[in-house]
Length: 318
Image 1 (tube, rainbow, N blue to C red):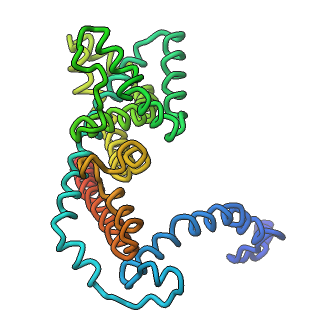
Image 2 (image 1 turned 180 degrees about the vertical axis):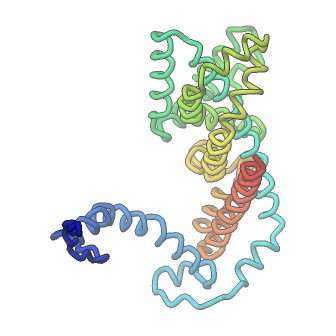
Image 3 (image 1 turned 30 degrees about the vertical axis):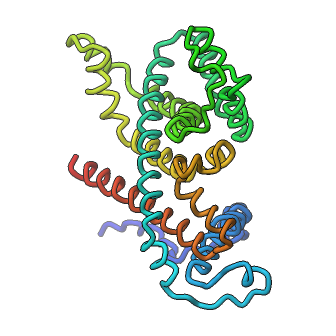
């Protein structure tokens, strides 16, 4: 009989994992680090939004602002605003204003980004530095500079046009005409917005593999064909994201319009943010102003929801 040595018995193991000392503390530590940011965000963003929603359903005027005790109005405020033809006129003007600005911003920023990609190192640094400085210019300062530029007597725009032989612009008052004021605001907002969009798109373009462009060049594709077949399809989500951000930025533009024209002349430059402010401050109907602002948020949300739904469908199809 052959005797074999039995293998050593294994110690029983338990499926339960015992947490190391301090493990729970390590799990909670990241949440403790971001807690101040979350609390500040809730206080600065969530609370004002909820407060605005509540005011839009109340009878809230100057008397309620001083002594409190605002009563519940239901949907009466929304009915009053939606039944006012002036609101729909301002909403259409806001849509046109947003579409013109966003279209120009995306076209110009794309061209600038394509230009920066093809520049040498020195020129690229100069152009990027100029974009950053433009982007960092305070909004009020930039708006004031544009006011000076288009000033009737001492403005550089009138001086340049007269120097070129256009005598009809001597002492021309730009801000007395609605379409001209509208156009100046478009130029101002586009000038302020292009740097951010161009920098973002340039950063995205640097991630596209060069092998794709080399293959397209071998096949005889030019610059426009390469952009249409390679750059735009690859970076379509980034283009969509930048477009959404610019829609929000332009749609809520208030400071530039208020400083330059206060919504005038007439109502030629009155957009929804300006309209809400005028109702709240001039008529002291803070409830109606809250309704207009909430409707503006709703319209922007629906526009963005439509875009994201379409983008997700395209991603699912691919």
